Amino acid sequence: MSRLLDRLPALATTGVGSLPFERASDAACHVLRAYELPFCPQLPWLDGDMVTEWLGTDPGRCGWTPDRDRERPAAWHEFVARLTSRPPSHGLVKLQVTGPVTLAIALERGSDRPGSGAGVVSLAHDVATWLAANTAGQVRRLAQIGLDALVVVDEPGLARAGVTAADIPLWDALRAAAPAWGMHICGWVPWDLVDALDLDLLSVDVATCGLTPEARPVLGRMLRRGARIGWGVIDPVAPRPAATASGLALAGLSALTGPELPLDRVAHLSLLTPSCGTGRLSGEREQLVAASLDATANAARATLDGYFASSSAQSSTSWREL
Image 1 (cartoon, rainbow, N blue to C red):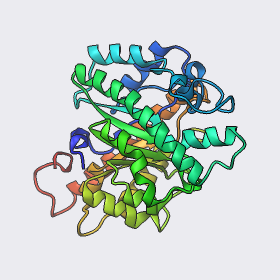
Image 2 (image 1 turned 120 degrees about the vertical axis):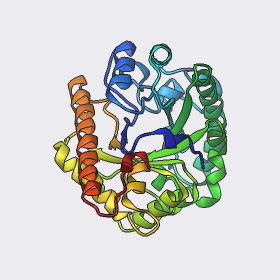
Image 3 (image 1 turned 180 degrees about the horizontal axis):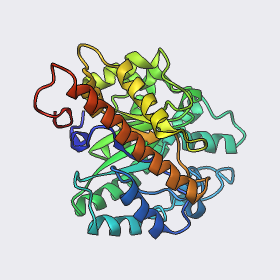
Image 4 (image 1 turned 60 degrees about the horizontal axis):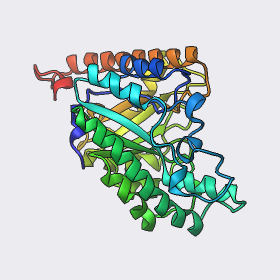
């Protein structure tokens, strides 16, 4: 389990990946200003959607070959330039990569196949090797400017792909490509599989999907190992007021609190995110989502400050410093 994420503050904010900007410079400036953990922007207006960003063309055209990819996202060079002049104090950057299973599903369906089962798993192994080589180049470039990367693999269709715990080695190359790795899964989460993945971070949508009973033991085990949970508490399509989103976040933290996981520990192992990217929405909506997320984090921290300040067991050390 990587300890790099220990550098982040409790309830650190970050985005999911896609942003609606049409200029790379605007996107790069925004992620450094609006989020505590900056991330390389994915720009659908310039890169295409999460599949075409990596495959470079309609996946239905033909089978996958490594020469189809675009070497770097459109915002990459601007993002690195901004990071060089204004690095985050904690020295961490998030990279979000469309997952090999998701790309394999797109390729299989583009060839009129079901997009699940052994065919997807076999193809995903090959795609993952290429993805890892591409991602490792980005990780090395960040290291050259003194920054460590958290690579988050985006696998929205994982629950329907027929992938089992026996197939976990297909992500090994991506895991090895970065100092820390995680996964973003929106919608239905295959909790048995997630339990076996040994992630440093799991990013999930609780704004629309809630915290299901089967999720709680898995998330608890992750936290006891020192992994992080990215709580997707803001629905970009219909953002809730900060007080409501903060209540949702605190309810999730409280649900995982216990003798082995005191509330301050759960807070330190938590990030706050939107439930999904905003790439297909408006720039104004992304600004609203980022501001709402920041207000949500501040409201949740203030509530925790009040709770610990009134607790007779609280020492003179702030819970945020523990």
